[in-house]
Every structure is written in C-alpha cells, then in structure tokens.
Length: 406
Ligand SMILES: Cc1cc2nc3c(=O)[nH]c(=O)nc-3n(C[C@H](O)[C@H](O)[C@H](O)COP(=O)(O)OP(=O)(O)OC[C@H]3O[C@@H](n4cnc5c(N)ncnc54)[C@H](O)[C@@H]3O)c2cc1C
Image (cartoon, rainbow, N blue to C red; front, side):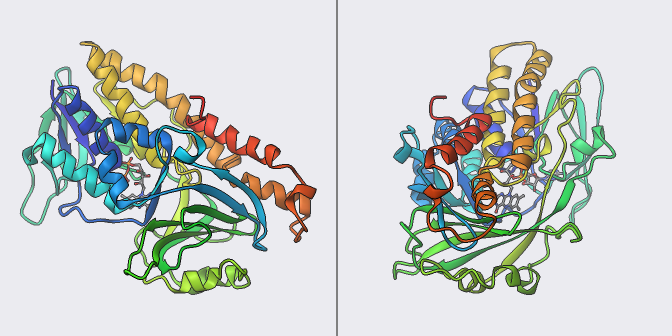
C-alpha cells in the first residue's frame, strides 16, 4: 500500500511516524523547501504527550521544554482568580510541557528522516491539485525554482496541509476561515521566572483584552532568565483580520495592556522586551460534513482548525494521527479504515472547535468578571469557590479528551 501525506507539520510527521511504527511505508510531501524552527510557544497537554511518548519522543521533548507545574488565572487587575496543578503534578502519568513549536517540529522532522529515510520525506513539494481514479490518486505540485516537479501517484492520500489546506479547498472550493474580530500578537521575551517559573498564566478575558504567558526555555542566558512565550488577544468587531506573515506592531495592541502593571509582573515591560512580535488572526472553521472522499482524507488543522485557546490544535492532530494509523493497521479494507477514522474523529474535534469558541478554559476569568462587574474584588472566594471554577476547567478537559479519569 502506498500512502502519500501532504504536509510535514505536526500532524503529517506524527502520522508518518505512527504508520512506520506499524510497519506501513509512506511518503511525506512538504511545501517548504528548507524546514526551519518556526513559530513561538506551544503547550503539550497530557493527551498530546501520550501520543508523542508512544512514538518514543518523550526524552527528546523533555530535554528542551519546561514542565508546567500549575495553571493560574488572574483578572485584568492582576488579582488571583483560580489555580490548579497540571500534568504529573495533577496525577497524570505524563507531564504537560511548554515548548518552542519549532523545537517540537524539529524533533518530529529528524525522527521522520531517521526512521523513514530521507528519500521518503520530500521537501519543496507544495501540492497544487489532485485527481482520483479507481486505482489511486495523482498529486500535482507547484513549480519550484529548479523546475516543475513530476506528479506522483499514491493509493491513499492524507492531507495534513494545515489551516489553509489546498486539499481541503479541492473538495470545498468555497472554504474560508471564520474570523470573529479577534486578533492576536505573539512574542518571546527573555525575562526572570514569573511566579513559580513553571506557571501557565492567563490574565484578563477576551472582553477586556487577554494575555497568555508561559515559559518555554529555562536559563536561556546563563543568568537564570527564561524565554517567556506570550500571546496578547484583543476582540474588536471593527478590526481587520491580522496577517499571518507580517511582523506585529506594538502600537496596534500595547495600549490595551498599558495599565497592566502588577507587583508580580509588569505586562507592558514583558511585551516591549520581545525581540520580535508576530501577528496572527484568531480563526477557525465550521465543522465539515465529511473529511473522507474515497481515497483521500483530511487530518489536523486541514480537517478541524480551532481557536488556539485550550492548547488543543497539536493535541487533536496527534490523536488524529494515531487513530488513523491504528485503523489502517487493523484492516485490509482501507476505505473502511478511512471512513471509521472520520466517524470517530470528526464529531469529537467538532465539539472541541465549538467549545473553544464558547466555553474555553478562560471562561473562568469571564465568570469572575461577571460576578465582580469587572471591578477589583477583595478576594475571589467572596464571589465564587475554587471548586465551582474547577468545574469549568474540568468540563473543558472532558470535551478535549484529557480528563484525568480518561
Ligand atoms: C509556521 C507555523 C508556525 C506555527 N506556530 C505556532 C505557534 O507558535 N503556536 C501554536 O500553538 N501553533 C502554531 N502553529 C500551528 C500548530 O502547529 C498547528 O495548529 C497544529 O500543530 C496542527 O498541526 P498540522 O500539522 O495540522 O498543521 P501545521 O503545523 O500548520 O502544518 C501544516 C504543514 O503543511 C505544509 N503545507 C501547507 N500547504 C501545503 C501544500 N499545499 N503542500 C504541501 N505542504 C503544505 C506547511 O508548510 C506545514 O508544514 C504553527 C503552524 C505553522 C505552519
């Protein structure tokens, strides 16, 4: 059986490694010619770690990441709202890691080169179109500086080509991202450890402006400072959608956070110390009626892009990868395997997409704001108990598939 994977991002490489582990060969076609360590921070939750550990990547990841101790929520006045232990500290068998997305990608990419062989990982091959017949699928590619790559044939194609998937557009030509007026700016700053130095921190809510802050590299300068990943989110119904590739401009978002100076953190100072700021739109897509079209199926962000609010984009992609690899390995009826994969994963991920829009983990801060009228309070316990706030967090874990009991 020949399997072609379109896109060598997190989903594509994890799927290639999962197939290889089950004795099934495949070829990966990645659009970028030279794979670089791109992106900023990404959080690997226990269900993502379970998939990565099964691929034998736990030691490599732990060596370059920070293990989160806790998740902590504050209102925009810098007041404590809710705290919970995370990963192993909360009783999971596996850690929750904060890591540079580029390092995660590099570890997957090098594992794929080593295990599949360099000749099976084709870079500089951007798929431009496809056609199917009874025996297989033909993939066509965009021209490269050295010429026009020849089309390739495969019996089965799995599209892991991300949020702007060309394969998805082939089946859904009117496909568009959903933008609801929320833009984000991301950066990394060298900064002394904040709180425990292993804290995943959310401040404010999307109604007031929101910051997500967590460390991704320890002792980055030999003086005990960390590389701190931060994301600023602002909702403005009038705003134009941020670009994916343009550098962010401080004047577009810093004023919202100007007064966010607390005795435990100076948010404007953290933002302005970043060497570079990237802008991204917060977009997702409505759930599709189907992902599988005969010999072709969709996976990861190509199938179910979601708001990056609960650290689930990579986790759901990794669960997709293992699920389809298991289905393919379990039967000689490949069509049925692709269909079963869709039947399991499409409804599950559609629920995460919806929940990220409506009740993501930061609903905890929105609840506190609602009860306090957005004003400072003397202590959170006067408004709501930690147990009630934990119920919001536990609901999200259950939807996303990483409740402790699961
Ligand atoms: C450059 C980049 C930076 C990112 N940074 C962050 C970040 O900082 N934090 C975060 O939480 N998430 C980030 N993400 C998103 C995150 O990696 C994904 O949401 C998640 O891991 C799902 O993975 P995926 O493999 O489905 O998609 P992606 O990781 O987006 O991978 C898609 C891959 O397909 C390739 N591709 C696209 N079109 C084609 C085509 N036509 N033919 C062949 N190949 C194609 C892309 O080059 C890419 O390698 C980033 C994604 C990218 C591509």
